[in-house]
Image (tube, rainbow, N blue to C red; front, side, top):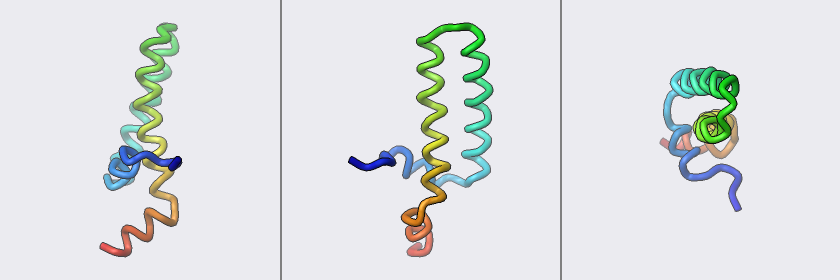
Length: 71
């Protein structure tokens, strides 16, 4: 089983500043959702937040950098 899903790898192709912006937006949404206490809403936003987090992490891996050099 791979650690990074295809979805994360595809998302990692986007510019880093875009991913960081979306990550910070989802972080703010997560804080707001946690204040309401809605488990369903928190779970939904956490899933989105995780996508951006994993995409940013994948950009730091040697595998991603190798793919960039090939292009």
